[in-house]
Length: 369
Ligand code: F6R
Ligand code: MG
Ligand code: MG
Image (cartoon, rainbow, N blue to C red; front, top):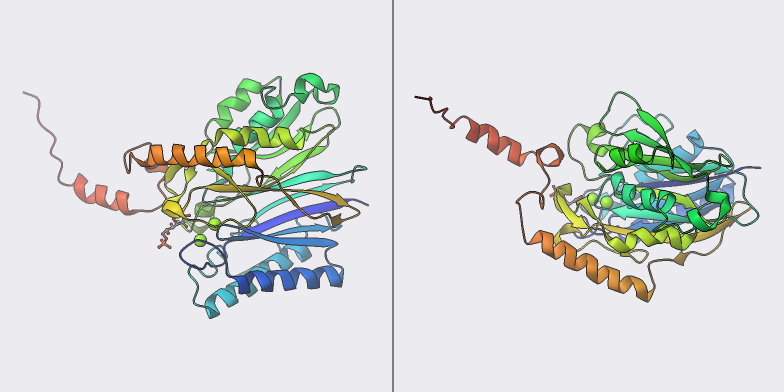
């Protein structure tokens, strides 16, 4: 029997501004998750939050894109929205972008990452959940942990990984349908770098192990402003990665996050800041940020989860959090000057465009004598 992991995440309202869901919302989400397990829809479910987003991590046997699973998540987010409204919370229902739900949350606002597989004898995996950024935040760490021996020593030391991995990359600027490309490393490494260097355009969707064809990772790739036609918040993505043996070890997946790389997100989805690895259930604070990512390690066995190990709750990451704060403060000192604030094509609010339209009419073209 195959196990499916589905992580579905959405912002349905917050205490403060866009800071965290309320305890009442989380209690409702947990109650609904427990009921779905009792009913047999799910074999297990964990409810967590990262910044202002609630995430359902579900195990079941119904496969990916299953209407019953997606309906459960959608209906649950409607219920947490109702609580947010009743409490007068900010941004209630922010990520539920459409009224007519047709059985799949993709293209509707929530982010979803799903993977179906035969469980290995031991099946360790990590759920990464980020807030105040787009799905391209995973480009750098996923390139590094699957394709770069600086982070994945197993590429040199473990014969199982020698044949490398194949990435499926999505062009998230294409709005008509899913536009994807498969890129195999190490053979096409430079092509992969060429794409992933632009994380607001090309985004890793999944990665498979070349020698076995097993899937090692799934990322939520939707772009909310493509769906809504206007800014409604960044995508705040999730990624599930299977670890150990033919895949990078848990520590190799974590290694690239020590860079605290710069990403686009943070305040008004329009600023470059350094990603801060945080503990489970962390809030949003400074400058509506900084961009945060949490990492929960589990094993899944016959569809049941172990307790989580909070992978960024370890003294090593205190130093990285300080480094991320320093990097963020350093670029924030530049205020609205590019590249601290995003370039025109990635600005998430329309104010600059409107100002420029007005100012443009006052320009004069000097005639050449
Ligand atoms: C970023 C984010 C916040 C808001 C900002 C203004 O993803 O959610 O930085 O963009 O707080 O929010 P509104 O426009 O709702 O007043
Ligand atoms: Mg929000
Ligand atoms: Mg969010």
